[in-house]
Image (tube, rainbow, N blue to C red; front, side, top):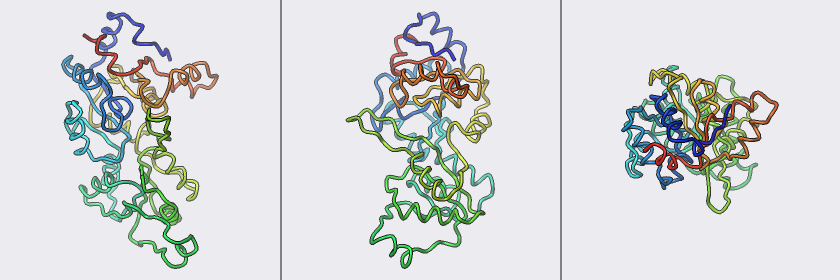
Length: 307
């Protein structure tokens, strides 16, 4: 719980840090890019890590895209990547259902990124796309409402078409105790630096359905044990030689802390230096777990320190 500024370290100290790690795990939104624009210097830093002989893996709570989509985005923005280096929550959700031998149908509150990953492993699904309240609630309940008896799971991810009918349907499926409730992630908001706009995240949608259903979901994304196990299983990493980079403390940094990784917070996304100082001075131990080992304004600032 040191929260040291990398920019205030000398080159020898920075080089000693990166000489001590052989694996880099990085978040994406708010760290490497915002929407479809790479943050300045971030592609060069990631590629520099590779030139230094580091293994680089992308660990994102983004559930909107598939791994194939992710590779296309990386290529367009200048990041080197392979499919085996990418873990998205849409992919991990499909892996989870496949691992448990799920055979029923899934109702999705989310985007086509989830449905396409499910399709790849042969899991039937419904729900993606707009589902607005056409008339009124009474008409919806009395005339238009019908549950699919084959549905055995509800997955909630980011859904730009989130609506009252979707909450109603998800909660109604979940009223059956045998129906699985899965959340891709619980990020409260997305990173944004545009017009002081707050972007509601998946966690906002999960919370609404959780409240109505009266049930807690099984969490797939960071900092869940499922993602931690997936990283350990796939990448054979040494925690003492691993660095987790992120912009959000209650997902990226918390997961790094739980795993015994070194942690680096970039201030180009969700959390701020004020947040770090507040948690560092808190009397609550759980707040201390949110404090990174290091922080820096943006990932691109590392370039001059690494060269």
